[in-house]
Length: 286
Image 1 (cartoon, rainbow, N blue to C red):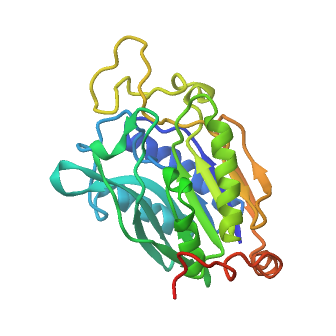
Image 2 (cartoon, helix red, strand yellow; image 1 turned 90 degrees about the horizontal axis):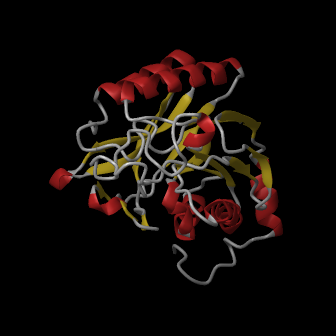
C-alpha cells in the first residue's frame, strides 16, 4: 500500500488550510498513493480559538474534505475540531474516501508541558480502526503516542498499520521524545506506524517555533508581545516506522511530503519472530 504523509503548517483560517490539503492530495494522487495523512489540527492550528471554528462531521469543512477524497480517489485522514458538550470541542480525525467513512476523537488530551488541552477539548473514548482495500488501520492522535495500550488495541482489532497525525509541542528534548515514542509504539504493537506532524512554523516561514501563527494563546487571547504560547504548533520530523521499530523514511523540520510503499506482509513476519502480542500476560483482551 502506498501512503503519503503530508507534513505542513496550518494557520488559523480553515479555508486557507483546505487549499493546502487540496494541493497536497492531488499531488499524492498523481504519485499513485492510496492514503494521504495530514497532521492533527489540519483544520486550524492550535493557538486559535477553537470553539467558533468547530463544526459537525456533515459541516462545510468536513464536506469539502470528503469531496476532495472523491475527486482524488484517495482515503484522506485529517485533523479537525467537532462540536462537543459544555462549550468544548472534540479533537477529531476524519477518515474519508472510497469505502471509508469514520471519525476518531482523541482519547488522551495534552495536559502536559504547561498546556491544558482539556480546558477546551473533550476527550474521546472509542478505539477506532478503518479498513482500506482489506487492510485494517488504526487511528491515533499526537499525545496518544505516550500510551502503548492504544496501539496494542489497534493490533488486537487486526490493524497492521497505525496512523498518528500530530501537532507536537516544541521544547528541550521534545524531538528526541517524539522519535523514541513513535519507534517504541510500532515495536510494542509490531505494526507499521505512520507519524505525520505539523511542520515547524519557523522552518515553514510562517511564524516562530512554539507559537501559534494567529498570535493568540491557547484560549484565543492576544499574545503578550513576543511571548510564546504553550500551544503545540509542530516540530516536523514525520516518519514511517517499520513493525520492528526501525525508521524507514523520515522528514526534517520543514514542510514536505513523504511517499512510501508499505510492505504489509512484513507485520506477520515480525510477529512470528517477536511475538510480544501473543506473549502478553497483562491487559490482554480475552
